[in-house]
Amino acid sequence: MYTLRPYQQEAVDRTLNYFRKRRSPAVIVLPTGAGKSLVIAELAKIAKGRVLVLAHVKELVEQNHLKYESYGLQAGIYSAGLNQKDSQQKVIFGSIQSVAKAHDGFFRDFTLLVIDECHRVGLRPESQYAKVIEQLRHNNPRICILGLTATPFRLGLGWIYNYTLSGEIKTQELRFFKHCIYELPLQYMIRNQYLTPPVKVDTPVTAYDFSELTEDGQAYSMTQLEEALKRQRRLTPLIVKNIIHITDSDQRQGVMIFSSTVEHAHEIMEHLPAGQARLVIGTTELSQRDQIVAEFKQKKFKYLVNVSVLTTGFDAAHVDVIALLRPTESVSLYQQIIGRGLRLGTDKKDCLVLDYTGMGHSIYGPEIADKRPATESVAVQVPCPKCGFVNNFWGILDAEGNLLEHFGRKCQGGHPHPQTYEMTPCGYRFRFKLCPKCSAENDIGARNCHRCGSVLIDPDEKLKQARLSKDMHVLTPDSIELLERADKNGRPYLQVKYYDYDANALSEVHYLNNQTSLKKFKINFLRSHMKKPELGLNIRRVSDVIDSQTALRMPAFVIARKKGKFWKITEKIFREEL
Ligand SMILES: [Zn+2]
Ligand SMILES: [Zn+2]
Image (tube, rainbow, N blue to C red; front, side, top):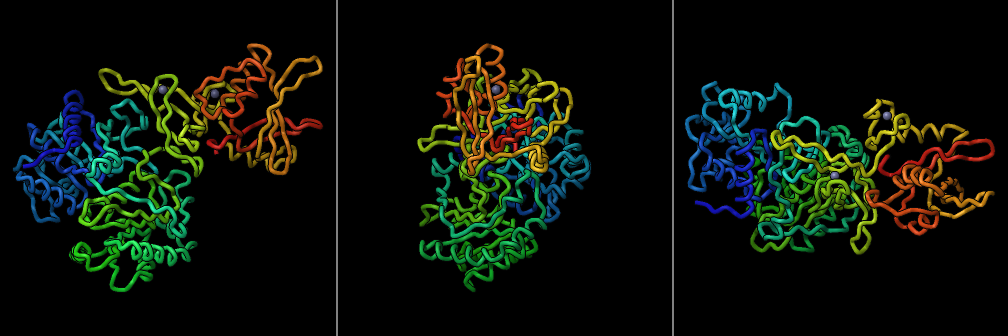
């Protein structure tokens, strides 16, 4: 029969534990090559009632079914595209299109629904998935719903589930899936030699610039992508030449090239050696695609170009170069594409990753929903001072790997309700925007105060207005100077001077001589200037601030207003606010 790997057994155990106590839909995240079919097989074996395994394309239905039967198990298929409509077996592999049209009798006695590639399931009540789930629940209100995916994060939507079992809140917006009950990192698979190690080649000659496409965290359109590529057309021949050069000089066996659009794919084909390259696009006939893939596996040609077609359900173990020429919206999609080259193969010790997207995704990094604030930022771990939850944020490390600064906003930790398992967020904010009216702490990106509803003016708008006004000055600081001064009564105060590249300066003044002024200083200055805002600096006098200068950061912009002969700083805007 089959033997489960330790992590597959763990995924099964977690699933059983979860559904013992609750019925909200759950997700398991497994990278490509983790052997999800074994997890499905084991769950199907244990399940008391019938099991329905759904996928969105017939190829995947067929592949999952084949894998399942290869363990010596029997299951039916319900898919018009595969000319099979079994409805009697305990386990049925179905395509969502066909099952959505099945007669009422089909839905009886199911106790477990498994949805493959479950990131496609949304909340629209008229969707095929919604209809099927409604039918299944109608027949069995206590049916367990388990989703499987390698990509739990989608551009435009964000996380496809609400919570992790470790107590992390991914989103509080409505999601079909409530919990992620198991997630296996790609790194585990490689470290334990279930997959070939990827080697990121650092110096591709050049890279496309796709930054504008993903800037606002929204999904982009094909037209936008085509526009971006059109402007960068001259780069394609150089990039393809680089791929060929690396493939030849390193004697690589098989190269998969992921292109952005069909036009782009044809352009890439023009520059690859004739007879050594084939193309698969969405409209390629299935029989022809199968033949191309078969010949690729037989190594009859070296370069396989595709447009978003072969990101899932494709296996050619000999692939040892992955070339990315298409933007990847999420780290998980990026990792999934690289996964195409990580199957163990003969005469294969690693897989080269040639990334021409300039997006700087990490092969092992966790997904972080916040926009990456600076190119030098990496994923860092920051414990919450209030609840102890260890957050994944963007941050900056020094050469020794110590955390210098991070851009985390709000603690992602939470406490589950013992009965409902709904999570109450910890709520601690590392960085926030104070409401000018009621002083409530708001998210950096908030447009309105969550307490009083006042409009919180967008920093970009503030900058725009300041630049247009002749009574206002916008300074881009290049350095900061902290000075101890004394007023005419001999009272010491802190002067903070900001200088730009041309040595223009703006300055602000803080008194620290009593509890009230110290408190004001903490709110008005320290909180936003600390590189790690969760740390408490013990400040009692001006010299304490000067001694702590390395823990402080500069704003991205300082805005000042003219008051008589002087300029008074009215606003400071920090990097994460833009
Ligand atoms: Zn917390
Ligand atoms: Zn307010």
